[in-house]
Length: 96
Image 1 (tube, rainbow, N blue to C red):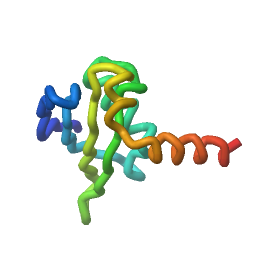
Image 2: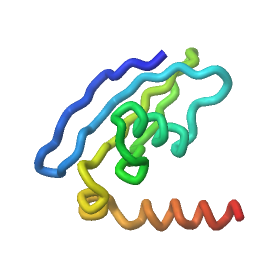
Image 3: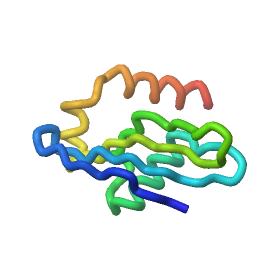
Image 4: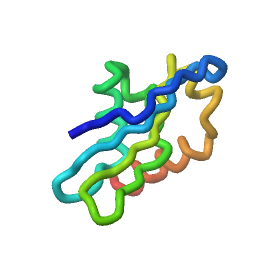
């Protein structure tokens, strides 16, 4: 089950700030799974989605996903810190 708790538009930063509650079976969703899920909900490309935090709810099989969905990839690159991109790139290289 999916419940959108908040979908707030931030015109200054050209993004939607979303808070979503999701149920899961075994493990909480990974950042990549959460980004794909949010992108499918908003019908946008995954490159425009940034997952800020996935917070499991203690004692339940639910997680709260905090995500930002940008209007364009350029808007995302202007706002998001470069450290996050480097961290994601390093994690992808380690898996190889």
